[in-house]
Amino acid sequence: MRVLIVEDEFLVAMEMESILENNGIAVSGCASNIAEAQNIVRERECNFALVDINLADGDSGLSLAGWLAEQNIPSLHVSGNCPADRDATAAVGCLQKPFSPRDLIGSLKAVHAKLADAPPKTLPTGLALF
Image (cartoon, rainbow, N blue to C red; front, side, top):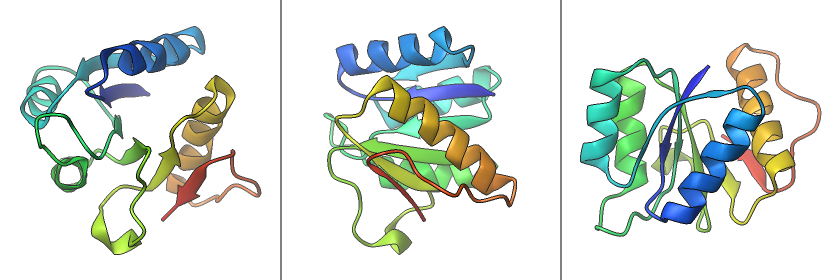
């Protein structure tokens, strides 16, 4: 799995990158807005994305999730404001901020299981699958 991180808070993005890499998960890159995310997808191998919903420059992770789905790249929102309307996004689910390293890794495992048509029996704290 090669993961794109889309997060406008630098320290949060670096923490996510560190957690993933410390657990043997490759990171394709970190982006703080949609344009950067799209460039990373075009230039590097990426097959999954962690996407914040409310990006500082006014971009919406909801629209980015739709674009990623068109590229056959599943995504998981990681946000303090998970969408109440599951039909509002093309993401697989949402992990509520703040999260623990264990919950982030558990969420990736749960999403991977869901995508393989083997939904997990339990979900990490703060994760909702759509």
